[in-house]
Image (cartoon, rainbow, N blue to C red; front, side, top):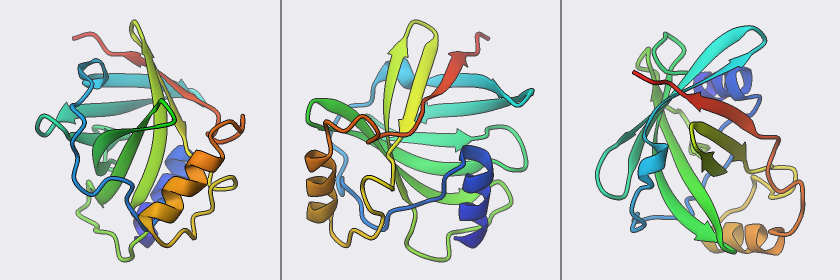
Length: 162
């Protein structure tokens, strides 16, 4: 997980933070609006986010997509306090590096408006990454749902048109 965490810090300015899932069996159908290739420019460099369907309830996510630094995750949707929440489980890199610890989960909220996707990662300074159980994580998020800093600053992507 060390490479994966370092890569995530460099890419998203965050690391894989949580060791417990909120969702153990995905049941919420995927949001078709998320599918496709998304792009953003940060520090003069273009980064792509690829979101593909694995089945009716899960996605395959790659970020930054299409290069040797790519990370891969399975993702699914849930809702907490009426907010859509994406659970990401990072499982490897484009170089075939696998996680070496259990800190493989991240959580994000998102909004799609036309060809714009905004993603905000859960702030581990508000919801401690040391949570030990799914119930504890759910309770911590629910108790913090009205805090304006529950999620980090948004990453804004534009849909890549083929």
